[in-house]
View 1 (spheres, helix red, strand yellow):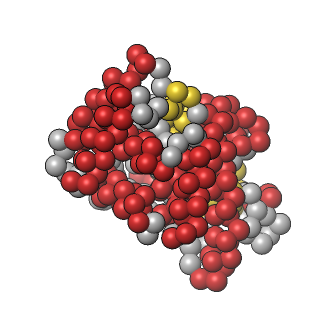
View 2 (cartoon, rainbow, N blue to C red):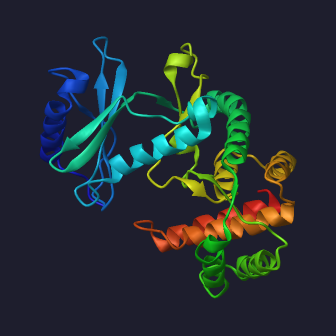
Length: 309
């Protein structure tokens, strides 16, 4: 991966500043935010500071190779927020403005801070945020749960599971689970359902809205990066990614897992079937996600599901 040159970044920042002027005002400086990568769907990120030098706004701009990726993320975030309602939907970070520059879409967000990531403050923050996130995930899944219609079972359940059965990139154990799930669905022993699905729900996509934090870093969480999200997704995958990323293990993990399954009307075994379905369907729409990375992620989630670690 090659970083964008300083000249390319300066030019893009200047173009964005002009295009976003009706939203951010004249003469605002866009500061490079982190390392910019040259990938097909990589976004460019910029920071706008207030007069006191504090981060105020965050600008996300699509790559040339994926000019609609930011607009797609915004649209899907709005769809999920609407489906979740005002109470649960407030966790979806929506932009304060958006537009396009040289056929690349961009969006402007209120700046929110990443989680601490390490040290004592991370342990405290995780202890506060994690149960709230898990509860939000359970409530959001339950609110958006919908039985998959019979005419969608072939493409959304049967075909993906059939492909997973013969995909030797997956472990024999997961392929066997896919076989069990397929037979259970066809026999009517497990009812596949749709729920909202973020598709990349890990600690890096959870931020703290400082407007609610009171300066201590433990305010309302918000979730970003909705480009892969769907209102009609599949259960368990997001829950497993979230649990792994936030270090939910052992007994607390299995208690949360069982509660998640019960609230969706599943036994733990049926929850495993739902995960196989989610993983199999996800494998059919990888887009720019490398298959090797997908397989490793699914394997980690499967092992989390089975042993809680």
